[in-house]
Amino acid sequence: MAEPWNRGQAHGAVDDMLDAENKLLAENLASKVSRLKSLAYDIDREAEEQNTYLDGMDSNFLSATGLLTGSVKRFSTMVRSGRDNRKILCYVSVGVVFLFFLLYYLIWRIQN
Image 1: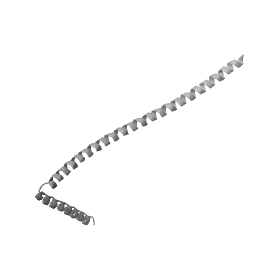
Image 2: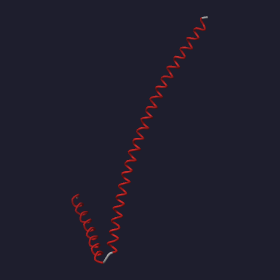
Image 3: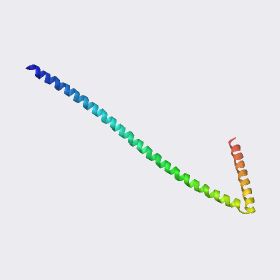
Image 4: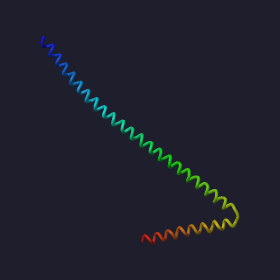
């Protein structure tokens, strides 16, 4: 009669070991799930920041496009207008190119 009681104790010890192992594995899994949740949150936050950055760049490009379109229209109007405006445009263009080379030369002299 003592034998069935020993078998019950052994079975109970195995159950306790399996229960302890299951608890350990459950805690391990919970920590991994928590870490994955944190990483998913970080990825989501980074994606939102990048989307905000890209939206800002989009509006900057649109404003630059509008500015360039207006400049091209004004330039086209000036070129199509009378001969006097063409002379002024030529003088201004030569002046800008000269100013560019003058500034380039001055900066080069200062650095050397």
